[in-house]
Length: 314
Image (cartoon, rainbow, N blue to C red; front, side, top):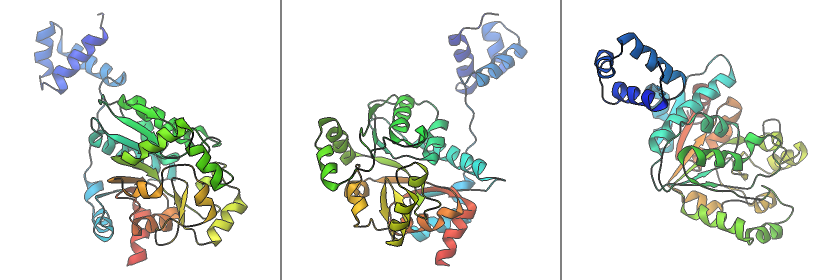
């Protein structure tokens, strides 16, 4: 039987959207019911149909509720830990991808930072045919040692998946002087992206510890271990969009923050929804500080990390 793409889509729509039985579809197309079952299986294998189970318990558990109430969050998704960290991160990002697929709407302006968690989230996001959306890279990133760390690649993939327009920050994340930063921000292409960061509806960000051995900026090659040590000793707890913040979740007035090329921190705090995605108990202190400072409004994390955060306030 010659099964065209349109035919496969038609059968899938009748079954999943029109609630027709396999027998009714078989009669409609003059084929057998087992053939319909085989076609539906083929639709799933080819990605024409994607089945997702929304387990709302991740959003309504006692741990989730305590995080929401303590930090006045819009939402907290707490995913049970698996046998290893990569699988836990994968499942947390799968939930974040599901959240985005149901939250993103037409005419939205979306900002995105960088990092492993966002890479896995965007990778698992299904294609969504949205209209008149923009995706804005939140900060520079040229020079990251791994491509998936670089926000421009993540922003490009996200824009492609939602049929949106892509605005990259075509500059390094860190430059040598604050004066050079201002000069770069005056360049037409970079200035255009910077202006787009003033009108975002939602931001997707990773959160990282500033412990030198755990710093994502060290792993990505943006900082040396020695530079990270000095920043940590100056009182930094974590970083978000390249900006370092203290134990109260306040962006620090330190030289390195004045050399970050990206969204202005005041514009960032004006974004209505700031979704943080981060796993791992080594990040608990940094996530706790970000929550205290209201740097994020929504959180996706794992249960052991969430319990560690809760233990900080009793």
